[in-house]
Image (cartoon, rainbow, N blue to C red; front, side):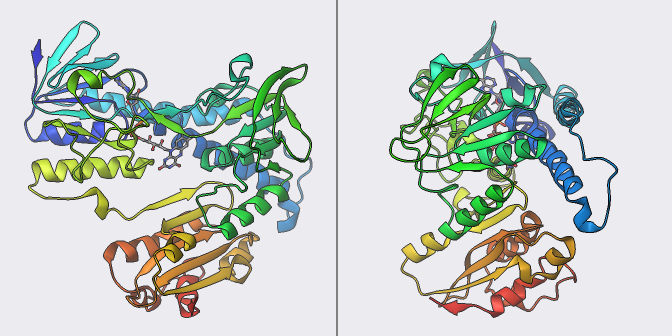
Length: 457
Ligand SMILES: Cc1cc2nc3c(=O)[nH]c(=O)nc-3n(C[C@H](O)[C@H](O)[C@H](O)COP(=O)(O)OP(=O)(O)OC[C@H]3O[C@@H](n4cnc5c(N)ncnc54)[C@H](O)[C@@H]3O)c2cc1C
């Protein structure tokens, strides 16, 4: 039995930074990772996908070169091997960096293998038994594979295995019209695949407002992506040409025949094989570890950070979990997860930057609202770049003048949204942003104008 001051399970987005802080505070740390250092974001999530999104953007822009007065001597050709190699290089560099930094960390011993609890203060990894008064769980999640009829009879791809392919699928059927599915769908369309997106709900990204989801659908359909919504009875079956995905029980062509099918239907936490019962750690019905405002579990001395606690589903939320735990444990603060302002982006092109509530969530509060929208056709920077799809929208509480939420679907939307995110985080009225003097020409410079057009609803 090895005794340490802290055990960290999982080298995702919270664990490595926490190890550095604990080590700097003089604690001995046992760090356990069962597979790839850097976790989902580095290996099968944000980093490879955003690298591929960049290649897809380059391909798209090359195809539009004549719009910018540039004539190419031949149509652009996708070298998928080099496209994938570029993503793998970015990932590998980041993964090795995380692993090296942990292995070189003072006071820290790295164990490679699957960790499981044996008791509230003991964890087993391979032949080692580790014990500590402080255990931090950062085990993340994996692609959810729902029990769709026929799913066991076909070869399907997930976000992980799609990153290993060496060819452009002839026809990629994406099951799941949410964030991950849309990013992969548009990317492979731009690499040359025929793409069909199949979504059970009546609309894509159904957590967003209807106007946002309709505009996203138009953007994708403008590129020739087939979108099938309200596909309530999805079934999978082998077909001479690949996989047949039955998409609709009531109307439209009954099935989409794909050469490849990607399942992008949500994530599930890696908590089912962690021996949580041996430690008495509580989870919710979907397996997410229950935590309090400081991310402590129901068992004293055990915390859960990142996607596995169900309080966030992003790299920045996992990292913020680390900041909360470290500040409370080492700096005497009492930071809370509920203080976090929700912000995220959907990396289709143009991207969607989001902060706070949707319009429908804001309306459901019953508060008096002010709302303003502006099409990207009326944003100078977008016009100059020749990228005018999308719109921006702000929702403000009419009494407090606080911004409740905003969406920027348009070129640079993933960056410009931070002006709003910062104002919301600062907890100041919208006029503070309205009176700033933004740089011209930017997408952000239209935010004060957007706020100047607020109307009661
Ligand atoms: C395709 C895709 C694209 C994404 N794009 C974005 C994006 O653009 N922006 C964004 O913010 N988020 C994005 N995400 C989400 C983001 O990747 C996750 O929210 C983030 O990685 C969560 O970090 P984490 O630290 O909670 O866990 P993870 O990064 O999943 O890390 C968990 C680690 O724990 C290890 N582990 C699990 N169980 C055990 C065990 N029993 N013993 C030892 N080790 C274990 C795993 O091997 C893994 O290394 C994307 C996700 C996907 C799938």
